[in-house]
Length: 336
Image 1 (cartoon, rainbow, N blue to C red):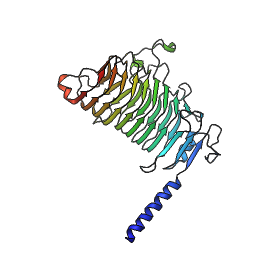
Image 2 (cartoon, rainbow, N blue to C red):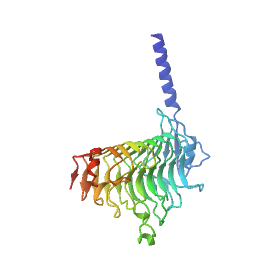
Image 3 (cartoon, helix red, strand yellow):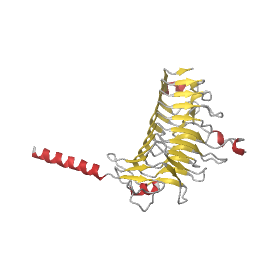
Image 4 (cartoon, rainbow, N blue to C red):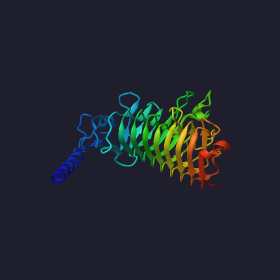
């Protein structure tokens, strides 16, 4: 009994220490990186806060426009992470009040999560104007939660290069990443005739995406996608992993408008296993809500569940070859 009481007291004391040691930092456009980051003496750059945080800390970013001030091609790079019990949170003080601005594509990346960085939550920011990506999850990142961010006008430029532009990118070794309640629109380069562009290739038709995601255990829930005409709203790609990708949930999202050059709001590319697509609304995609790429006959896919989705002015999925139809469960979808 005495041992139990001692262990309980020690555990309770440890929890109090962990909770009380968490720090809230503040960032404001009129702050200074020489400040200590408290509410009355905020930092100037989000990057400065990212360099001093520890597990359990929170960073509150006040309204204003934040950009790259050291010309390294990114606005924020996170190289410190949290723990399973003590996440690090970055939050706009007011929803979409703190704006990360890539200044008309002159900055490549708005927000990068570095290699091996885990247990980060980023919420309520407006992210716009970066040339390559709004949010980038690097190698071996895990347990990253992107919540209620407004990501738009990424990669809006004239180019024929093969490198994709996207609101969210997730590398093949990343896993347990959640995308919840974000709004994503106007992603990708200009087409021929737009903004005086004269393209020599067709890369503007299918290289840029709302989300281009590798890895495993991804959750994409409650997001809104619209006016993404240079690729797919979500590309689920297993092309860069030996075993493909597995264990994904794409649930309760809303997709509006078509890519005029390619079918589908969602593209299943290369090897996909245990993909659950349910309760989404697809409005006016080109021909189909879901396309299958990489293996055009539907092979290299297994345990794909497509249920309870609502599709306007299109079919739910491209035709699947008869010999591969058992790899799919397609039921209770409504096509209007």
